[in-house]
Amino acid sequence: MPEQSSTPIRADFLVVANRLPVDRKTGPDGEPVWRTSPGGLVTALEPVMKRKGGAWIGWHGAPDETIDGFEHEGYRIVPVPLSTQDVEEFYEGFSNATLWPLYHDVVAPPKFHREWWDTYRDVNRRFAQAAAEVAADGATVWVQDYQLHLVPAMLRELRPDLRIGFFLHIPFPPQELFQQLPWRRQLIEGLLGADLIGFQLPGGAANFIRLAKRLSGVKASRDTIIAADGRTVLARAYPISIDADGFKALADDPEVKAEAAKLREDLGNPKTIFLGVDRLDYTKGLRQRIRAFGELFRDGQLDPNETVFLQVATPSRERVEEYRKLRDDIDLLVGRINSQVGEIGNPAIVYRHESYPRTSMAAMYSIADVMVVTPLRDGMNLVAKEYVACHESDDAALVLSEFAGAAKELKQAYHCNPHDLNGMKETILRATTDSRAARSRRMRALRHQVFAHQIDDWANDFLRDLGA
Ligand code: ADQ
Image (tube, rainbow, N blue to C red; front, side, top):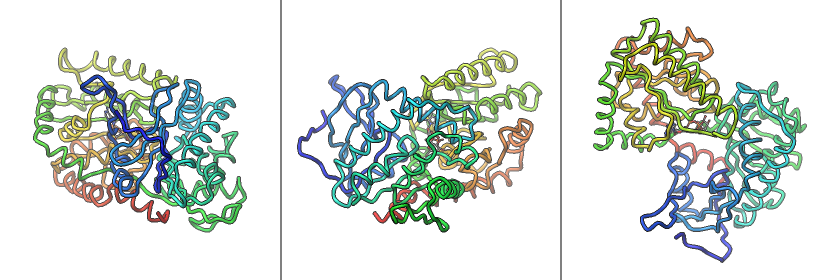
């Protein structure tokens, strides 16, 4: 059982995120145990947490349940309870059916509901209050992502002594789109409560500064904003990355290599394996990608006897309508293509709608000859970087949408526009048939980039600028 504590805890470093970095599992004795959730953010921040006596504030994932705080791996876990209505209106509603589509180029129409906004504000206030109670004098607080836009200003009001940082993991839209939001000024002012606001790309920071000037009337010069209360607020880009060394070590592990060999065999030892890996999300360009492969197979430009397209998709946000529709569309599309090309027991597209452990992900990356990442819009896209870190051979290629944040760093990928089906098909073919020398040159450059900027550089750069 987690170690409970009744004495108030005061932490010098806090992370505030929608979800806690732990998942509840059942231990061997049938009792619940908390395990660290896999993911780059946790990997990057755990050392800082331990060093500084940190606390992580977030939801534990079960609605209508209140849990006491506990120690985990040398830092404090502070659960914030959410009711079923909070989950529907704050999380599924305002976060994932209003802000998510609005911030991703409205590729699905955002929904604006006043009740969702009210709940979003209430839940943000509860997160801010939880942080205010736990933070030591002058502590550093790092707020994560679009679910908690209002926390910086709410927290500053409660605790003006804190250093407050905010990082947005998704794109920050241009004003033509952002202006649609009925609560646009409140969101901007929520963020202006921070000392440092981080974005994936300089374009996001520039969009934010332009909107802050327009909606809040603040003055700004380059990346420095003077808030209404005279404080200086910095808005800068910190492109997120992965634990590339950790991924490479996984891919080199003999058990992972054995899993990779078995997977290749299960796929029928094809000459070429194409791979897609995504959360099942309409921003990831899955419909377009699968359609492109369908045409390439049907038109004989790819031979299903020697080629497999393996697509895995993690189930995601399944109670939100757009996601349910997407799931049905993809099932239908894959079924239709496989009924027309390939053979019984030897499908052209192998599609799995499930989540895999990191070891299996590393095995998949290591056998894929061409990785295909085609989001319509993406803040960064870690999958592209994970592939580069795990794939050992230079005789490989990454096809990458120019609308992924990662395209700015991974310049040597084969870039494509996922809205242009013919263009995407040509790029996929080119990535497959280019000379070995050309592909190797690109892979080496990509590897250099991914290993030179890892997740702890991202966290350290941000925390240095925050003055932590
Ligand atoms: P996501 O939209 O979730 O992240 P991405 O950056 O690609 O997108 O991260 C997905 C993660 O899920 C990867 O680590 C990947 O390994 C994992 N994953 C995907 N499919 C999986 C499967 N079937 N089984 C197991 N794991 C799977 C948001 C933003 C991104 C930004 C990140 C980090 O939308 O743009 O890069 O945050 O800031």
